[in-house]
Image (tube, rainbow, N blue to C red; front, side, top):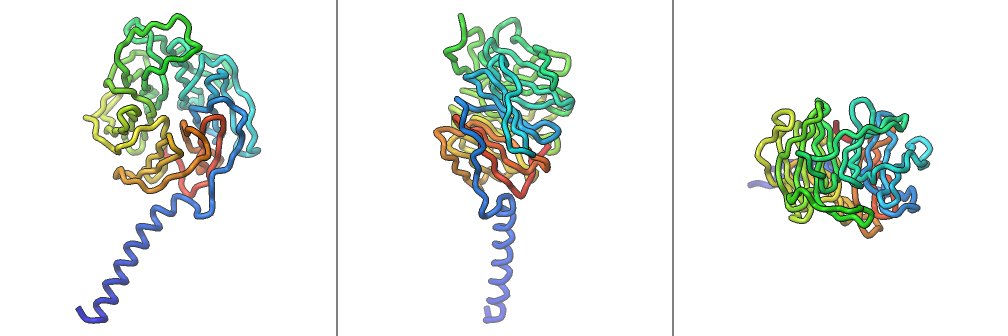
Length: 297
């Protein structure tokens, strides 16, 4: 290989490497770090953004739901007495759907704060404790039901021995889809037609193709990491939580770790006017991080 050919080869190689770096780097701003919004809570969880980009999140030990307003960067209380809401997700009509584990229920909460109980159990048995959920294009709800016994549960007796992934269709019928060691974080994408589920105690996250309402392909291992909560961006990158936020590309390759100065990072979502602000719930606090990407639909 002569000198001219070598130079051309290295130029092409550097261009390839540079493009790959830019692709990963383009998700995040080089000098942006997570910003503390508030640390006045007991344990934050379950963030989800409404159609305006405001993020609703829970403080489960205190049985409250709060709203982060992206325009003012202020937090206000939305609702007390939430059934001990944990994970949340907005439906197509901008109602907040919650995993309310006080007595194992799924709730629908309107912006007017009117409450409808969507599910009370499965086959006449109490659910262990619905934890996290995602809603598909038909309004069906995929939700995880691990078991984390709470000190506020009264007269609890486990009626379902397995820890399962379920699907509730739009007519209210619930189907058991699969059993895990301890299912937890879940997220899907209508655009990608995929569903991600974490088996947190097994330290694994799986991915499925969505074949229909409550119909999934055989699960495939996505990465060797469990997660409390998760979200997806427009590039198909998956954000997992626990020790900070760890970001994986669509191939399951780790591309970024976002350190959060808290004992535990529970969950994450995208919000804001342009859906480009990563909202992070972590222990007693909530944080925001401006990104160069957006949350996926």
